Image 1: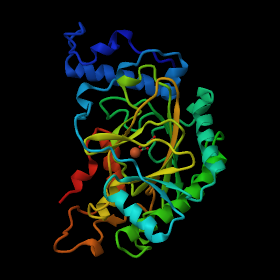
Image 2: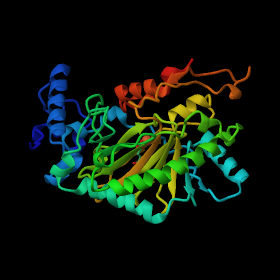
Image 3: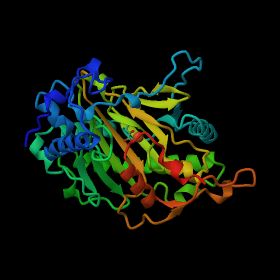
Image 4: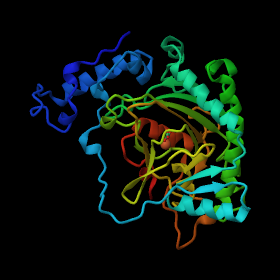
Length: 386
Ligand SMILES: O=C(O)CCC(=O)C(=O)O
Ligand SMILES: [Fe+2]
């Protein structure tokens, strides 16, 4: 099925902040508007070819579903005098005490850091990025075989997990693979990247354990404490593809959000597009060849009783080139049988001066809520505040 957005729906760039009256468009009731949007979303979804499918069909203007509404633009005050911090780089072969301190500093403030000397060979990192690109750039009918929104499936290719909930659509397609603790069978994984995803999963799983141990020590706990809570037991690989975007200033690759997991390890190619929100500023996270980006997820913020910070981030798109990234979410698959464990603030971290600020939840409940809510710019963890 081909997708042809209604060109009359497409405002020119200078028009996006205008009302329908100013734009000379028929004034629709909100129900009619919603209906048209739903129709366009369905037509897009049914192509099973993602945003890349639109680009392949030669699209030069953004369909209306991708337009970022005016009220989504963040207030960033250019006159602010705070210096923009660089995202720290931590060498994991440094002395343990130095690494723990650096991890603590970064996790309590920016919520993001980068790691080098992490033990994953460069050929594996390059191989994953190539494999993921191969998947997203192969003939559309081959990748369409994997396209599904069935949340029980361990492997699924789709564009925008929250396509039907969000106010606007991100310029991004994703191959979702729940790899641990129960990996999918080899034939569920797409041929284009099967072997390399399985190999990367083993390496990144080990790195996740190391990082979770460092974070436990950073919290002043025994190094096994978070491992024993199964924080690094499960992981999901989200292999993203951000096609080159003809009108890159009218949309985003990802709306600002925090991650609904314990921890994320992100492999990005050489295009700088990821930004972290810090003190009313967007801070770039430029790629360093061979390094990985690490960020604290909502569930670690919850169990550390707010000490470790899950910080908002977003992804820009590029007019000239596509970008590939692979986010490894340390958490259980929503439909894993091991997803019922209750997580609340860790008792050893609490005191009279530091009472619990969050109520306990299961990873399953938290992820279901995140899935339902979608990337709407609000902080899911606020719902769990006491
Ligand atoms: O692609 C990126 O740089 C970030 C992806 C991300 O934030 C996510 O998967 O949650
Ligand atoms: Fe994220």
